[in-house]
Length: 289
Image 1 (cartoon, helix red, strand yellow):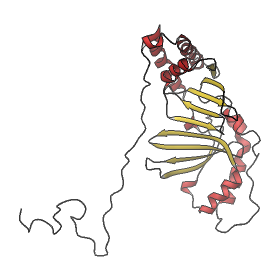
Image 2: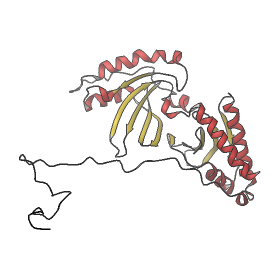
Image 3: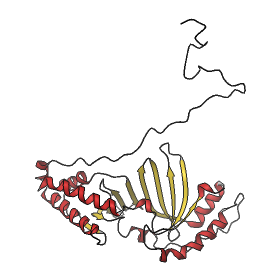
Image 4: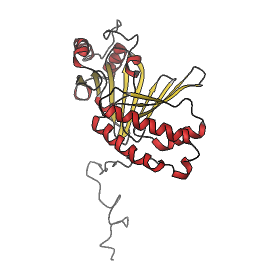
């Protein structure tokens, strides 16, 4: 290579290889996504290991039976695990694994969806952190959490009394929210179509968002769905109102919305998912029979 062929810095490609623009600008490449949570099957215990935990195996069979009843049209079913010792609980934990959706309700309820969609591991604790209940809930979403999340909630969003600068679009949005809350009863339960206000498509200021946050109040139920980025859903202090945010793999907010519904559909396991989970669990439990 001759000196005429190489740039002054010695690089043929990459940063520094091209001259800067006349206005001093430079080419910056967009950071590409580098992380994604994907499904991974549970590391199923071996058959010989399961022989030492017969109660855990029996609980697995009970979960399969409960899941089958839900697939056949029954209401969500629960399987109690509180009586199991540490070894049998560890078997169930390994059998079910951890899926993409987790739920927290205050500090006393923790929920983790298993790798089997619609099979939820629920732990309830007292104020001192001691385990009170430990069970598996089979259904689209853990039973009773939505009702508990809105106990004592406001019937409507409340306009803050203090006037603030830079508030433009939030007050009419509060009126729109209150207009759609009465229709919740007719819309049906969790997963039924609701009313969505896409804040990402509306002009607003940071003060507008703070105004809406105060008008709606904050609830205690938080749902996190991990996939290609994250979806974070939290209940508000206003009945039937959820604040939903989608983040990409760089944790940048890409969609911000308020949903007036029983429960945002993204948090629910579909009927097809429940049927697939029942079939997969049936195949797994064959190992221990």
